[in-house]
Amino acid sequence: MARIVMKFGGTSMAGIERIRHVASLVKREVGAGNQVAVVVSAMAGETDRLVQLCREAASLYDPREYDVVVASGEQVTSGLLAITLQGMGLNARSYMGWQLPIRASGHAAALIDHIDAEILEGVFAQGGIAVIPGFQGVTAEGDLATFGRGGSDTSAVALAAAMKADRCDIYTDVDGVYTTDPRIVPRARKLEMITYEEMLELASVGAKVLQTRSVGLAMRYNMPLKVLSSFEDKPGTLIVGDDAIEDSIMERNVITGIAADKNEAMVTLTGLPDRAGTVAAIFAPLAAANINVDMIVQSVPRPGEPSTLTFTVPSASLAHTVAELDKAKEKIGFDEALSDTNVVKISAVGVGMRSNAGIAAQMFDTLADRGINIVAISTSEIKVSVLIPEEYTELAVRVLHTAYGLDAEDAA
Ligand code: ADP
Ligand code: ASP
Ligand code: MG
Image (cartoon, rainbow, N blue to C red; front, side, top):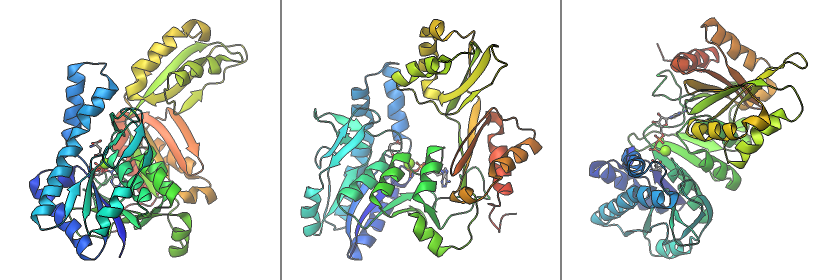
């Protein structure tokens, strides 16, 4: 007997037919003698619709009320799945975030503080199935809180850790984690295994198959994660610690995956004074305003000459960033603040980079061969990222995928 969290995403829950199929997958696990808690997303497209309604109601909406609106999608699907399971003769019940409770702080991108899984012990002792809406928790004030887009993944992993599950299975509309988004690159190859660290980097640079926070949590609790399809009966991808991979596969590709993130905006400040404190004067107000700065490039002028600094922020923070810079214009002393949202960040990730030189150079060469201009670069121990014009997204991902030897063998 194992204790499992099964999480089903929006496409898996999109309509009664799909929910029936999900119920059959749950029934199979329970029939095998396992204790099961199910975490569900809203039906595909529903959260987008709810977010749009909030925007239409007021451009600057109250995050508390936003949470009240967007959390409703998961309430619907959890009730529907419980009804469907009951109709199959199973002992199932839904538990809203506030009923467990899943304690959280903040709104719109709330953090999970603690999950009380006590109720579930009673449910399992009676052979029951708990159906839990993803994406939502409750604040200390008793308000609804949601965990940011894609947050049901984080709900599932946090719940798995709280109930000391043996594993957390993430069912989605693809049959695992691929070397890049299989909907963009048909030659993408499914990975049998990937390390937490690599998955964390891939998710953070745009591979939306898992919310980044969920991978961080799984790594922290050493919770075995599996990504698999709710549409096809296939093995899926295991996300595990470093050692598990090194022991099982002797030779791996240096690069594990490639991701694109169109959600970046670039800001360039011109005519900056060449003196100590300029950079600090730019980034201090942005940090105070909670704006996440990602890539930074500064052109080094001849001593005394004005310089230029370029950096990226999430597109959603661009207006806020420009407003903060305007306020600090005199203190910083720049000429112009230029911005551009037609950029994309392309990243290559792999733990093999630690022991292999030349990965970044290979990326620059490959893009240069196609005439793709690189605007900014950043690197970490296991990742290289470049900022390029957005129109080259697909081309860049495809040529890098081939250059790093990631194409599926059977691809034409
Ligand atoms: P769910 O609704 O089940 O949470 P998501 O849409 O959040 O599903 O995530 C699944 C999608 O992630 C896939 O349909 C795929 O297009 C995309 N994706 C991006 N990068 C990858 C990758 N490297 N491997 C697999 N899927 C990826
Ligand atoms: N329904 C939420 C969203 O679309 C949470 C999730 O599905 O993970 O972002
Ligand atoms: Mg998702």
